[in-house]
Structure formats: C-alpha cells, structure tokens
Length: 474
Image (cartoon, rainbow, N blue to C red):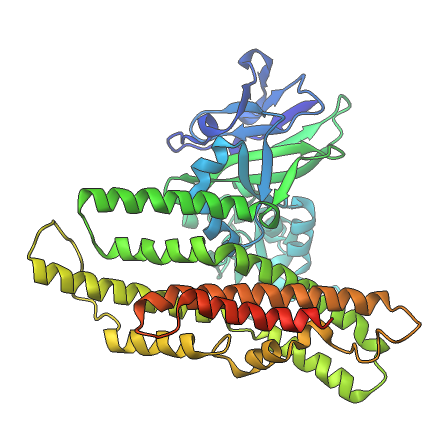
C-alpha cells in the first residue's frame, strides 16, 4: 500500500507536539520518495495500518498502535467534554478525532463552472465569453458567479470574503486571486488531503480523521490526520461508550485541582467553579447520562407503539408523556441547585474568613455580585420541599408512576402477551428509578444546608418507598 501526501498539504508553521503524543511507531524515511511539487510518496505501508500523517512544520509518518482506539466526536458539545482529559485519554491509548470528508475538487469545479450559466445553458454575463475569463478558467481559480447580466461579481469557494468584480480583458483569474487575497483556492490543504493507493495507483482511502489536540491555540491540530484503508475495520468508539470513563477521569482531575488549591490556601473564584464541577460529576453525571439514554430509548419505544393504540385518548397520553420527557428540566434543576449550594459555600467561607481574620492568601474576586445567601436558601428550600422535582408535570408522572405502567390496564389478566408493551413497562420503571435517584441526591445534598427536621436518610427512604410502591404493583 502506498501513501501520497501532496506538497500543498505541508505546513510552514512551527511543528507541534501532536505527533510525539500519539501512540505508535515511526515509518523510516528510507521509504519516502519526493516527486514534483514536493509531493511525498511512501511505499510498503502495511495493509492493516492506520496511518498518522503529521505535516506540521516537518513531515512525519507514524503507524498507530494497533491497541489504540479512535474516539469519534460528533459535535462541539462532545468536544467540550473530552477536551479537559485529552492527556488522560491518550495515556489509555484513546485518540479523540473528528471525521473529515475529502472534498471532490472535480465536482466542486464543475458546480462553480455551472454557476456562470442560467437554466437554459446560456451565459448570464457576456463578459465571461472571453477565453481568459471563461467559466472554466474562473472555476479553476476557485470562483463562482454571484452577479447578474450587468454585474460580473464572483466569490471564492474557499473564502466567501474574497470578492472580485470589474474584470478586464487582460486579467488572469488565478493570478488576480493570488495578488488581491494571497489565495490559491484549490491549493489549500483542505482540498489536498493525503490518500492511500494500491500497487495500481487506485485510491483505496477509507475514512480520514482529524486529530483533536491542543495546537497553536486551536483544539484541532492543523496538519495531523489519520487515514484508514477503505475496507479496514477500525477500532472506533463514541462518547456514549466511553463517557462514564471520561466522567471518572474528569472527576479525578477536578479532585486533584481542588486539593492543590486547598493545600496552597489559594481559595478563589476558580475554586468554586471547580466545586460546581465536582458536585455534578460526583453526584449526578452517571445518573443523568443514564437518564438521557433511557429517555431516548423509552420515547423511541413509545413512538413505535402508538400505531397500536385504539383510542385517541391513549394517543394523547403518549404524546403528552413524550412532550414532558423531551422538555424535562432535570438537568436545569440540577444546575440551579448546585449553583445555589456553591454560592452558600462561598458566602459561609467569606463569613468564616472575616470572623477569623485573613489567615490565608485569597484571590477571591468580590467584584462579581454573588447570588445572595437568602436567595440561594430559597432556591434550595423549594427544591428540597418538592416531592421529586420543581416541575409540576414531571412530578405528576413520578407520583402516579405512569412511566412504569402506561397502557397496562388489564394487560396482566389478558391471555395475549404484548412484548412491545412489556418492554415499555420495563423501560419506564427503569427510567423512573433513575429519576428517583437524581431526586434523592438533590435532597441529600441540600439537607445539610437547611435547618430541617427531616434527615437526609429519612427523605431518601420516603422517596425510595414511593418508587418501590409504584414498581412493586407491576
């Protein structure tokens, strides 16, 4: 197998550390051949290899460790969760990546060329009938037409801020593009990604991945990509399969930072931000993730079961249940409670510091107006006194146990077994149990901050009894 890296993909900036951080073995430079325009070809690449190409500053090739796993991120939200623990993941041979689609330059140029014609195939602006300004010449320079019969405006496909009009007979689209904007559109690295080929030079590139790694103030390395053969099974994971491990790594890192700040006596705003992260990760992260998984599965089951419902009222109940779960404010309630708890921690820490005098070096920023202690106590009291959550619709679902026995009237006395309904009942009971667990944790966290007669353990027992009384009836 052969790897080819176009010369335009090579970077001129200083090399980054991405290459050294990735687990694998180097490809000897003896296998590298340079051709015209600095294009590099590397032969004798193993067919089962996942190839890391890093062209940041100096060109290097590495075969990734076969035991490593590619963690495929789907969006910026997942990226935000993974970013704090990139080093810890790499230590476990987990490499965070984003899938990259290789542009089809020929197809893009054809679309740009067509933009100069109307639906009947006639040129929209006669100026582009000139040979040097032909639609093909414009497309080759990366320009698409955005004018009309009297305006010869064109824009660059790579950067739509590159706008040119008032073309003259002697102008060259490519040279003019370079002169005005220092841009050679289709020579940009994004259009010239490395590729794999077989002995007959047939392109056999499968998926291309961009490495997630802090480099030059960007979360993505500019020139580090992983290539795989088209039919090669890739050891790949998603955030859902690893997020519990990632939460554990994040919690461990937050705990270390908190202990360091406490030991150094440098209590500041960052400390209380870390406290919020600690409370979320230690008490709610696992439960809330499980809730989201179960909610997604439960709604899918309910939607698939709706066509079997005979009564409009039952369909309305199903739709209402789905609407409540989709609008479920559990995550927001957790954030509000945690913020109020940390605000009270901060208020009490300030009171203790003022009472005992400046016994430690503090960098707490008092310029920001904190949530008043009374307001925080009111927020916590409302959450503590709620049956389960502050949201009335969700509370009704919880108190009636509807998620665990929806449409089950007469089911257990029927001779006909409905497996689809049974699955909904089981998933609903499981979902209810997770919500009860979240509510219990909220109450147990709040109890020490409020002067209540009920103890945390007693409240937790009450909540558990409610859930058990609902599920045992099934």
